[in-house]
Image (tube, rainbow over the protein chains, first blue to last red):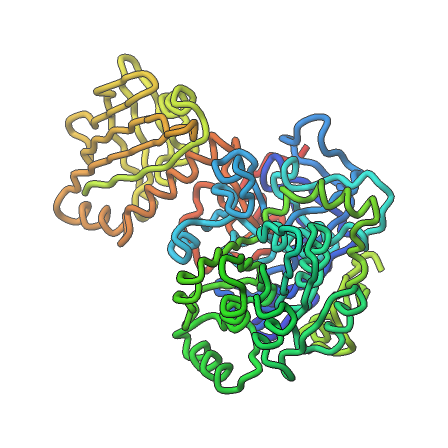
Length: 393
Length: 183
């Protein structure tokens, strides 16, 4: 079959690889009908996440049709022909973390838990196509993919919604929703969202759905700000405004009640000297992540507010404003999304027309044009917000 | 050499004890243990992989057995690598399952065999016990050892990096793993 493979830093290739096979009794094989490129895939391509190996299949946002089931799939659950979406973190459903619905922290699904433990203190769940530190699972940007422990990790879609409406249940929609959910939004809250990429857009939609009085988007790409504006949000271009001052203006000096970092470790900064400081430290490997958005969110948030982080961080950051965080009673909440927790609820919102995930799709390409898809997404060409790859096309 | 390790399993102490007490389960999750045959009166015969394709064997006896609580064992006199150990099963607080606490001691012989054994356990022998316990937890919570394409070897997943790429196995690779999981 054809699959999108990591070929080294700044290099992806569409290669011929063997078809996937069932490795655990509760696995299923899926014929992929839609799969997307995620902003976090760019962290892999850009070389910021360690333990990638040449030939790894990329992709953790995929859905399709079950074509084979393992012998351990409980009767009455999944069967050949079912249409399913597959959450990006792989959960066992039985360990202490899964029992607390902290699925992305599953204790059993990362075969390389020993290495992850050294890096993070405790291991995290397996993730498809996201380095060997998260297990070395083949990704879903391919014609076929394995869904591991599928009775827990594949959700059947019974309604006739298009792929475009349900594909993002695998990651970016629940990730955006969790960002807003962690904010514990109260009536009258103003929510500021750093990053108007796919996760940021869905964080904004979710904040509004959860009752925010006003939502503010912060980015520098005109087309991304335009997309947020068209959806009804206030926007700030950080290249032509001081973000904190502008946020104070917009909130009568209070500052946003809740701040969401939907940017993560490859942030850019309006001030060249700050960006250069972090970029140099990153190049020297004395800092792995550039936390501009996080710093700014902490400094901007009103006292007693919540800073909710769903942008991806991989290692260490410098100049964390611990004083502002502590003295102003801020709550910092974060996590890789516990997707399984949100899929049923979000599917219902989509079915009722309360969320329109397809609004972010700007590009639909056949799988064999994935290399071009990565290029336009990474370099923000052609107003690219989200690329969906169609293996059947 | 003395090793200790611990993990928490989301099952009641009785279930966790029972799984370990069936000593023939041990090769399912202990990387070095090829075979354990149980005999009468708490005796067992162990076959363990040693460096350079050699195997080491010994007889062991259960010296303490408190159902749902504790199992202790010791190798019989004359073992190539004398060893003893104990595993305790304690209820975790708040219904969080069972804490499993393991302590093992090996009397590594002097001379070449001792050096080889020490080398075999590597610089981080604790890591091997931790990995064994991780797989023990998987057996009880998942029902089998979780495999990825990058690390498809089950209990033989000792080499973490570099691994094979995260892409499907070839027929030859799959045949070596002897997978029988497809319906």
